[in-house]
Image (cartoon, rainbow, N blue to C red; front, side, top):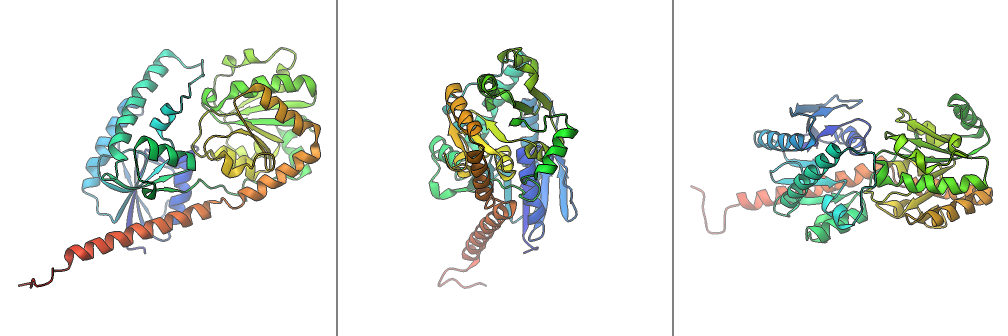
Length: 399
């Protein structure tokens, strides 16, 4: 199949973001089966051998300008590129393409009624976001029509529902292929390893740690997590909360009283998230909107007890009451579920084991196998169509 040429188009390939990680895992495997060309502003693959990279020059800021420049330049460059299949990440070029992976449906997000509660964002940031949203909606409306994109791939059942509803896509043209997780890298730690990790980072050896992981704190519900911790911390003096990710901690500290504030650690962005999962006990993630959160998959693979809102692919990972708890953005309900876990260490252990077993079926290899099957189906369809067009009609002789 190496003679089959696939062009993958994204703003950035490789790095720490969810979409960037997804593309790294996909390309690392696909290059062994297909000839791969990547069109992006940047490519940071750990193993780039055998991958052709075409850099699309553009500005990084302001974001609306970046969107326009990338779409225009990439669309023009694509016209002169030989390929058998075009795979984009989202609505990103004006050309006809074969496959597009959707990690975030902007119209679905608006229709969900979710409000951005991050008060730390500046006026300029909010204006920039509003303009960017309008441009993304226009691009989605243009690109997600069947005549422009043959197949859409949603990273969760929720995204599929949003696409079929918001853009009237036939369900048969929207597949669901969830993100994966490295179950070797993200794994439960033994007692000694966990104690060593906590000691390195100055965390209490015997306390129970609630972990929140991610950026965009307003959308991901950090305020609800902190308010719930405030109540739980008064009942359990050995409970701590760790927040890993970029954000303005000062904008959220008012939610925590002086009495328990010393038990909240804002660790910032970390290069080795697997260590922070391994030293924690409960993953607390009351997000208002997700597509298919890598943090949820990583926490589950690390064997943490899960307390999540039922958004994105959460119910693919958590069976409520068995491998975790699905909650609303309701402080009282979150406190109740945390209290149930903290009162029964045996119950917490059962949930941690159950969620690890459940996520072991959601690896990156499984994800790629499904993409490879989809590629082969599309390539076969294209080959059949080409053969029909080249076959002379009955009664017509070639001269």
